[in-house]
Length: 258
Image (cartoon, rainbow, N blue to C red; front, side, top):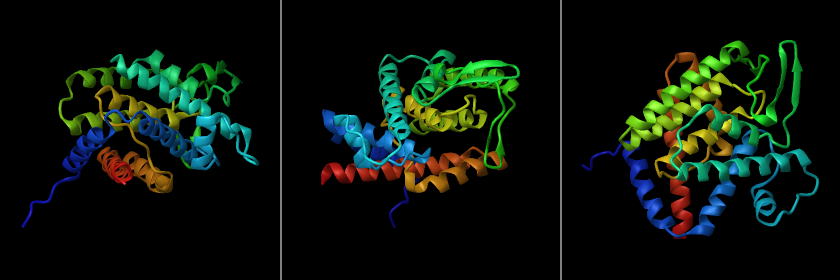
């Protein structure tokens, strides 16, 4: 009876096959990045279809009867993705300035200046929030705790970027940064998009394929995040993300071969 291969090994093998097939495929790579932007922005409320996102990014065509703010969300996300991929090629570590740069870029044209009791901040500049935020029934750490929590996360991430060795360890580092960043929610807006971009930064840093959470799995994605928080068990989220990674790689490989 053939031995069952665990998901970590399956994804690692799919990654090698995907990288082999994608070697030199510049146009295919470009459209993969468009898809990353499409799925990430739909998860956050964009109503543009995948073909409309492709038309906007490839030909600068706007979609009729769709909010202009949704077009701006797409443009901002794609520019942030391009920036971080270039940054990854330079093998730069994750630091506060980089995170604030990404956070500002994803809301460059949709963010705002906030004037609150304790001061003012500008989300388009990647300023950390000075107000408390909620998402549905979930409340996030007080704004006064954000700087320390974020700096601790950055220090841990920098250390682990130097010590992880295996494929699984590298992926789990990417997923951990994603999970813990969005759990801190350091910005007034754009935290979900930024968390997924930071995940992909870690993957790109280690020369692994970048990918997306599928829009149709949004509910399961949120459930995985909430379950991991409630149970204080990150592995729940890691398992979900490995399955999404596997789904992405299988889809891409099938399309390339077809």
